[in-house]
Length: 339
Image (cartoon, rainbow, N blue to C red; front, side):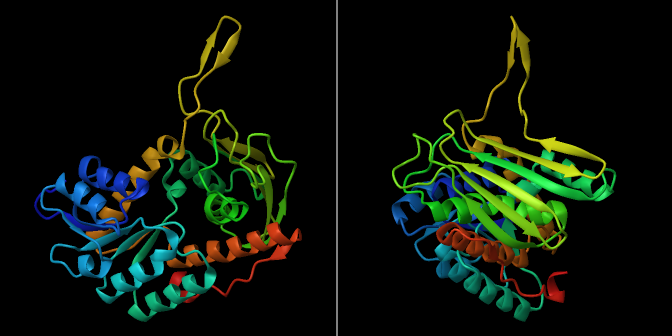
């Protein structure tokens, strides 16, 4: 959308996620337009830019972020490239929406944490889009109200129809279960202190060498216990569910997102085929919230600290997976800057 006064966004990375964000900014949300696209595959970037009035393609992020008309950055490149892109955005003091992971490891995330604090103000919102999903928002409000008492357990199920090509056991933790790491911290308002990973026998449909499913257990500093079933080869579709078990009751989300039909002795509905369909509205709401806040001169949503915390939990999770033991999370004390 290119109405006068809208926010000029540079989208870094034009793969599946980046291209979808380009579409979202151009056709769905309001208040912003795509001013630049960046990709090492310059032909792909040129093809996307050609369909957007006033959009310029680049093969180098630094060149794009210095271009006139770029007032904000959406980072959708692979995780290992995030640190360099964010540091360049900091040099221009540009607000950033960065797809998760913030970075693939806690050391690089910590460097970004320190660099942002040197700026003296927040610049980064991390793309943990489940915080913008209507059902998760409703569950968060219920838990915060205290109506159900203290949360004791949180059960999560995260199922894909099939594992993405080249997926590994470690990616199941630091790419897929990373979402549950963030929603656990957000829903409960607690930090994760330890991780255990159990591996049942793999499904016959799991790709060669992939332990699938996995069962991940978190402990928190508030005394809650959280479990995550991550099943990448569930065959029937994409499904995400969560159930909070509290002192005075329980609350569950994710049971159905479409019409429920009862007929001829049976009942049923549909299951979304992938994360794009299941969380499309959450992605829309996330980007719209980021644009609105940026135009107000604010930064809201998941912070660099949240990205760092998930990176630290991911590292503990991968160790727990490979060593077969309970691993405590090594997490710095949260700076006052992010409280």
